[in-house]
Length: 193
Length: 221
Image (tube, rainbow over all chains, first blue to last red; front, side, top):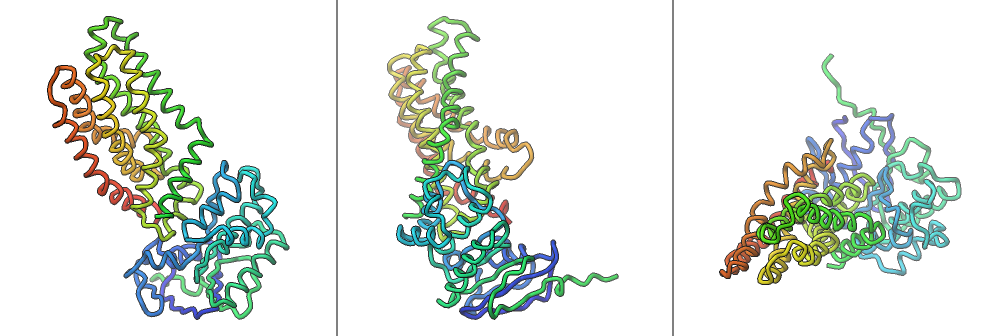
């Protein structure tokens, strides 16, 4: 899918993964999350290989994939509280996260009644409901209206001010300040003709 | 620990809100047992002889019925992936899900078993051993079943594959579960049989979550 890739991310940094469909944006995010092992090469956090302590790596990352991971019968508030509890987030953090993405009014509504955009906002609210220094976002702004995209950008900016890091795969334009770009099509494997 | 309890609480809440799944398992158990007198005839002696076996075999099948939803729904909606990325280790996650699964399907089967045994005219000496054996055996069914459910995750016709994979592994629980009731009715010691059921559970408790976690990891790659 890709080869010869080499990058580093500093605290407060952002990395945008771009490239056509199938260039490996999602796969790279899954490798960075530790879901998929790389065929060759490795990843390190502060110089320490991720494979030494996968549990510690999982504790310091948030991953938002294509799927929203919401249950139709649980309310928005319950879903968010569950995911926060899995990472040590408390009740106050859950309320702040709901407010951040303007979901307070939907907190008692079962997720089956939420629209696609609202489900997406709820999935993104997980990022704020418990703290983790590394956010891995796969097409985070898909399905969001302008106001919600602004909410997301504000949350990202605040996260980076606090020293957090972002890696986002996107083919939509996500205006992030001082973001490094990684165009994955430049790293496509060269096959012998 | 709080993350472990959060998973148990979530799965219990999901099972209660979508009550039909757990109720279906119990309804299958009751119906299947009630069918036997129609099939083999109503003689009390015959029914009393086969009561323990019928209750156990139908309990196995009922437990099997509920296994495919153990990971499947979480897998489809992306929850499993997210759960695998939380600090809670994958074997602990499997254990939490097995506990919730047993509480919503295994425990109702245990509680319903004496009533169904009464329908089949089981002799009075057999009730307490039946409860004990089911109480020790059904958690093993959930644990061993979780390995099968994890292995068949994402496979086509996973339900059929799951039965072929899991039912042979249920045989030890069936043998010693039925034997402990039969021994009690015959007036013999039941402790050896219950001990073997307990040993099976103690072995499954650490091993099944490890095996299921390995299967889940490869399913999520």
